[in-house]
Amino acid sequence: MTKIIDENGCIFGKLNLIDFFALIILLLVIAGTIYKFNSHCTNINGGAKIIEYQIKIQDVKKSSAKFYTNGLKISDSKTGNYLGTINKVDVSDYFDYVVDVNGVLHKAQKPDKIEILLNVKANAIETEQAYLVGGTYELKAGADIYITTKYADVIGTVEKIGD
Amino acid sequence: MSDKKFKFNAFDAIIIVIFVLILSAIGIKIYEKSSQSVNDTHKFSFTIEAKNLDQNFKDKISVGDKIRDSVHGFFYGHVSNLKVKPAQKIVENNTNGTYILADIPQKNDLEITVECKADVTDDAITIDGHHIRIGKLMSLKSKGYVVYGYIIDMEVE
Image (cartoon, rainbow over all chains, first blue to last red; front, side):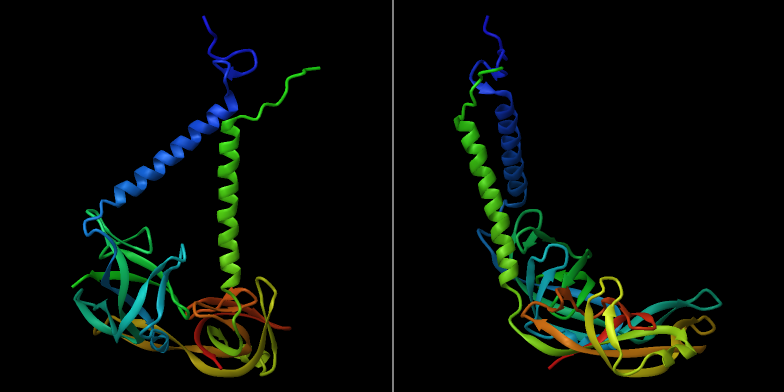
């Protein structure tokens, strides 16, 4: 009976063990990559489309408002991937809740603090499970988003996607 | 002594090709990053707000002081302006459920403006390769002091 591994360390006398394990690892990596992209890419609109989404940045100093302008590009601060371009900026006073001695919550304006609402336009792929911008970034309303622009590095919240 | 000869087979060739492709991809990525850089060096200034400092601390800082990064040691520029304000803190007024700006006795907030040269591209402003952005916590030192504060303003000329 033919030995599976011969005296030279070759499987069935043909393929050496190290090559065999390297091939297995390579096949697993390829399979994993295909699986990951397939699970995101059941593309329901046949290609990328332009979407608009909103990012809310809260409790920042008033003086930072001038650094958010139309036309500014936004990137994911962790990966550097492009996430869209600002096409509208709304600035308003920031309010938070303060409790009084009777346990009643009051909505109170925080001095020198503002809230910034950014409207962002981006190319996205819409799948059954997510909106993907910048390749693999999943946009989810309610999720924190870590963004950088030329002038700022900030954490916001995705408020709304689409109309 | 073994007279086993090394045999180069098809699988070794595939592995080498993949290895070369990975190295090329890394090389391209590094090249793209470095070629994006340094289009322009501009005169630049940034202002940090150092909060809640002892009243006497302001006397240590003078316009013209040379400023370095206290963590990495590289040179930024010179102090071009110093603004001293009474230290204030946002606190809750629980009597009527509002926020107020309360003065902190015997403390100052300092706004320190540093004038320097920065590399400005479409994507970022950097000094000695370090990004400068609003809200970034800076740790600055000069001959006799170190000061911490967030960038609250900046200007490119």
